[in-house]
Length: 299
Image (cartoon, rainbow, N blue to C red; front, side, top):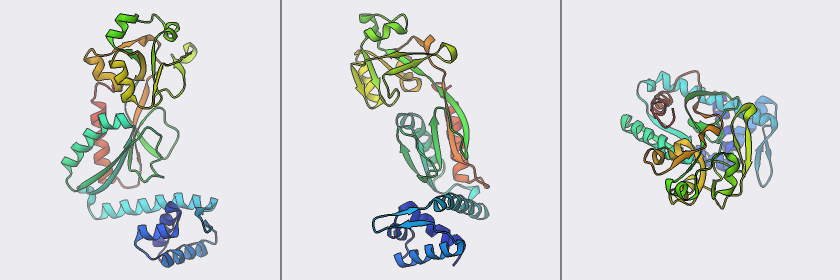
C-alpha cells in the first residue's frame, strides 16, 4: 500500500482512538482500516497501537510516529496547495482559537473581514479560556496571551495587556480610593477566576514584587460577570486591561493603583511554520496581526 495512505489511516485511528472512528472519518470500511494499520506496523517492525476491547491508544513509539506523520502529511498538503496554485487565492477551511472574551472583542471582527475578502474560505472559531494545543486539536492559528513555552510554532508578537485593578467612580466616591495595596483587604472585592484563579493577587515585578491575600465577597467564573458587578458599583475587581478599556474610556470604570501593576503580558499570534506558506494561513495571520497591532487597547 502507498506509505502516505498508511500514515493517513494511522493518524485517523490514533486521533479517534478507535478503528471504527478512524474508518468513519476516512470513509473506509473498518476491516480496510485495520489492514492498513497492520501493514504499517509490519513495514516499520514496531507496534504503534495498543488495542483492547475498550480503547485504542498509541504506544510510546506510536506517539512519536504520530507527531512525525502529522507533520509530514501537513507538508504534503501544503506542497499540493502550492503546486495547484492555491497560494494565489485562499480557499478551504481555517480553524482559529483565542481566549473567549478576547476572541469575541478582537479576533471575531478580523475573521468577518477575512471572510468578506475571501469568499472561497470558511472559518471555525474556538474561543475558550484554556491553553489550546493547536496540533492536537487540529487548529491552524491561535492567539495567546502570556509568555510562551518553547514550541515548533511560529509566534508573532502583536501587543500586550496588563492586569489592572478597577472600580466604578460611584464605588470609589462612596468608599474611597485605596492609597496602597495594604488597603485592598478592607474593600469589597470581586474576583474573576478566569484572570486570577487564586486569592493571592501578585503585584509588581522583579525585586519589588509582592502579593496580597484577598477574600473576595464575589467570585465569578467569567470576566463579563466581574465587569458587570464592577459597573454596578459593587466593588473593586482585577481584570485584563483590554477587557475594561472601553469602560475606562467612557468613564464608567476607573483604574486604580496602577503604579503597583505587574509586567505587561505579551500577545502573540501562533501558527505552524511549514515549508510552504499556505495562502489561507498567511493571509489570515497578516490581517489579524495588522488589526491587533493597530488597536490602541493592546498597544
